[in-house]
Image (cartoon, rainbow, N blue to C red; front, side):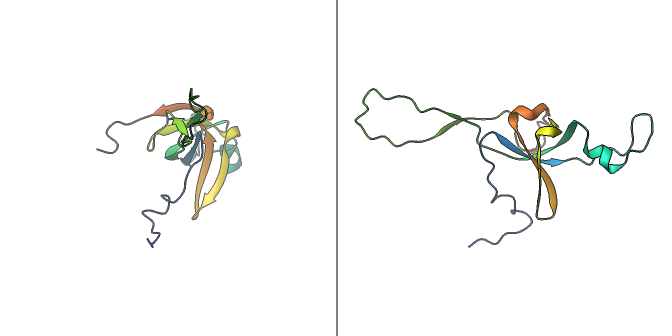
Length: 126
């Protein structure tokens, strides 16, 4: 059996459906005019940003109807993949986010529809 380490501890998590696991960026402590914000105000902002850690398989697509219904077929679920990819910076709606803590780290799970904007760095993994 493989040992769980810091390098692979998130590999055993499976994100379901059209959901995305995001590591939120630290909120800004100041406004653009220089005022300091308390943590309660920072956490309640409607729009947050963070890095995508894991992505679900996507939207399930209904199976094609066979013209020979008496034949037994193996039901394989097919998915339409999501736009979001691991490593993207996502700007998402906080009200649709589900907060969780895993291995002492804070994460949020959001549906693909709650992501407003993605910033992708093409040379991120090169």
